[in-house]
Amino acid sequence: MFKFLLKRLALTLPTFLALMLLTFLAIRLVPGDPVEVRMGERGIDPVRAEEMRHLLGLDQPIWKQFVDYVWGILHGDFGTSLVTSEKVLTEFAALFPATIELSFFAILFAMVLGIPAGILAAVKRGTVYDHALMGAALTGYSMPIFWWGLLLIMFMSEYLGLTPISGRTDLIRFSVEPITGFMLVDTLIAGDKGAFWDALRHLILPAIVLGTIPLAVIARITRSSMLEVLSEDYVRTARAKGLSPFRVVGLHALRNALIPVVTVIGLQVGTALAGAVLTETIFSWPGVGKWLIESIARRDYPALQGGILLISSIVVLMNLLIDVMYGAINPRIRHGR
Figure (cartoon, rainbow, N blue to C red):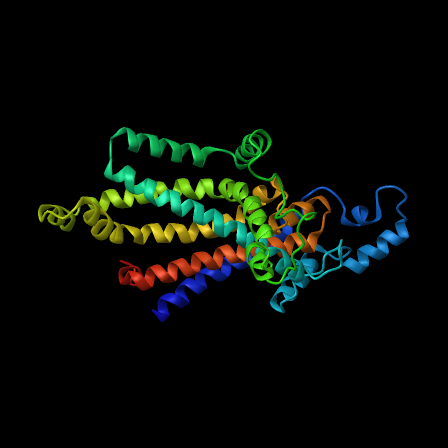
């Protein structure tokens, strides 16, 4: 197992290096000058602009900037925001709980609906239920997030008035001290039931939008895994013994079918964290995704580099964790069989 872990870590290190290089170069291909953004396009003093470029290290050759960037990362320094003058890691830590909270409920929504939908589609294979559920899953997977989000806002918020449009809570009616950064937890700690239900209502639409694609993936994988298990001999034996369909499907088949499903769920957690950018922008959710979009507009190189690298690193580490867990569950994976 230790050898397997070392092998996976060795494969992960080049990924981190590639991430650092790609984020560094891609951001500098974006049109615009961060110095001009900070000073304003009108009335820029050339001398002052050169002084600021020197202060920010932007007058150095690209290779020197990259070496300094990597050196800082190795020492735990992800840079300082050009706009707020705050440490990037500090800003990220303050905003990341909002992204985690949104991603958690998105995956919870996907699991609660996706697993039963996949089971039902497998049990009712070839029927109208199977075609309808898998057709809905394919539709959900294909829908653009921004279009789906705007559609839900128009219907649920504007037309029916059931949910708020944006934000994490009503800042005018409720004031909750951010202890953990997780709004639902903080409202419970504060003992404010009104604020808790308001935060939960704000969470519904973003969680549905972000969880739609994972839901479709989980449903399809659950169906495929269940179909494979339902054709096994031990399932046919259980049916021949006269066991109830619930025991055959729920006890014998589902338990064995969940291994690939759990793997996919773990991968979808990383995908949800990385894919929250559009959802947070649509719903003005104050998380890392919205922060990155604003950093693009402000040409805030350190914030963009640090934020993208941190999110990407979390996704890579999540994939590594899933690989290790899968290797622990299935010894054949560790031995390359």
